[in-house]
Image (tube, rainbow, N blue to C red; front, top):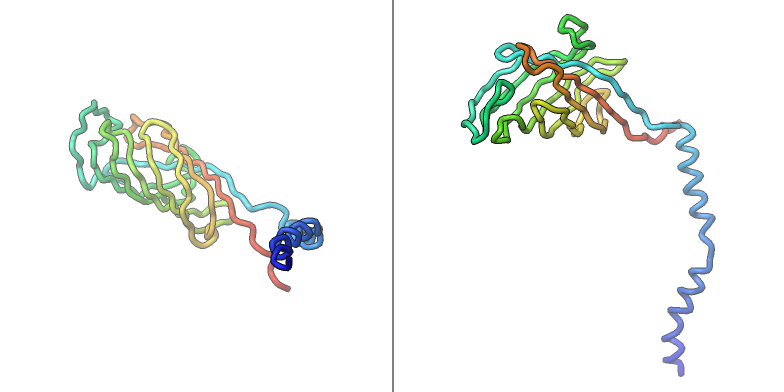
Length: 195
């Protein structure tokens, strides 16, 4: 008989435990987060646009010329496997003579047989809107269309930043190709400083 009551003890104990309200602990946790949010009401973000100016054999160079792909090649494509490096100015407006607010430096490897897509890695050094530092991006590039790159790191004022960068070519047939670069940056919420 004692053995039989042990078989029911655990289910009865768990049933009673389930009836106990946990509002006290949950409520204080939510209030703690609420208080933290009141001191830091919204996550910090920064959205702006710059323009990248890339001139072949001046700010951008083909280091390794790839092999010809099976599909047609145009003036906006590079052979499959080409390694391209760049150090381009970032300006406030599409006009190259406008104020320089940063530098884009990195590399691209042509990864599509059509010569229009590549894998790109870049460091964007910025001095904008009271922020100074660099962000690192990586991703796929299409020579003719908008490309999106996740932010994978940052330095100085951009340390721990998250977000993405967009790149859209404005004129690909000119000697200097101009890209519209959109920045969408978000910082994580930080706990309040101890007093």
